[in-house]
Length: 469
Image (cartoon, rainbow, N blue to C red; front, side):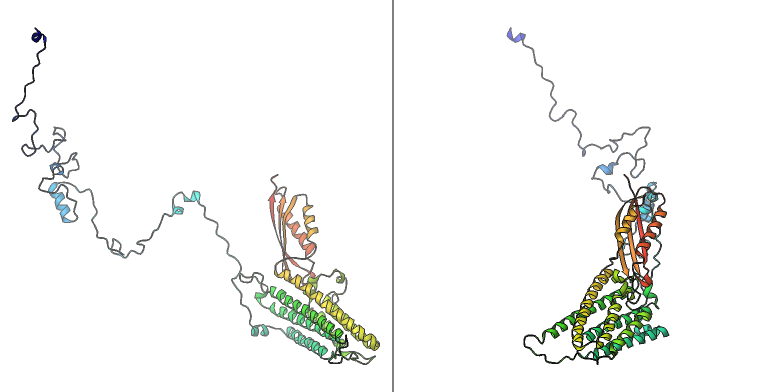
């Protein structure tokens, strides 16, 4: 009963081991279909190796057991042509392989740019003119690089007859200074006067040298090597003379103190000083020659004319042209007093001689120090003249000017000054009229301060900015 109720399990038929069902054939025992991946049909022709219409690899491309190579590269020359002709296939490449040789171009010519990185010139592209604009060609400077500087022989040969006579007079002035020094005979006042005459003689030489130097183009014309010509060399020479005047005054003070103290404290002087140079009632020839030499140099040569104007002593401005120069005034006044001293007694002559010597020495020190300060600032391109602050206030009073932001004034040499102004204006109307008005103000207020002939040439540049407020 129990065995009849259980279901019966029937085993599937087994295939004998020597005949397996659906067993795949080995490649060695069966023929492999070369077109198994792309079956033949009536639409597609059977593929051929090397054909452009081939869509599947051939037998040689799948099985390494073939006798020939699976892929043969296209060869150049006759081999490529024979292969294409035998297979009936057109070669898609039309170039020929060329062997590369270092230093030569493919055409056989030497390659000069081989190995260089030329880069991409973006400015030459089709849109470069929309992005990068070529700057306008700059106008070349109308200044030469340099101008020939004359030699001493050229300098001497360019002198005119008048300039030679003036140069000869400079040697006469120097001879007068030497004679006054030789005839001093222990007088400190005459010794101080000889130092003043020596300074005036140097000024006369400088005046003639400047006059002869103006014969050459390099003196006044600007160049790249000398932007202001050689006129600034006159300022440098004047500074050297001022330093010499300062040290001569200090030497006179030292000599006067030594002379005053050598007889004090029971000490006797090593040499006697005779103060009676000339007999009473006679004329002192040295003082007379000093007056004549100073007048001739001041009137004909105008030595120290520019140096006298830069010193700007307001006390002497109303005096005649010769006496308005502090150096000439000091020389002439001292010489005139020395002419009057022989008319006085010996005791008075002794004390006046010492006082006059001290006065000359102190005046030389003060003049030399002031000249060093003014000419030193001029060499540093700085302007130290008066009238700058009133000028700025007058410019700010203009109704179109808001404020003067920057104001710089420069002095190049005795005859040239420069003014650079930066203004903040309310509107941009009538800019040219405002610029012309500023130029007139500068030249009117500061142009007659000093310079050759009492006039100074000013170069004025203005920058106008609009007030955004």
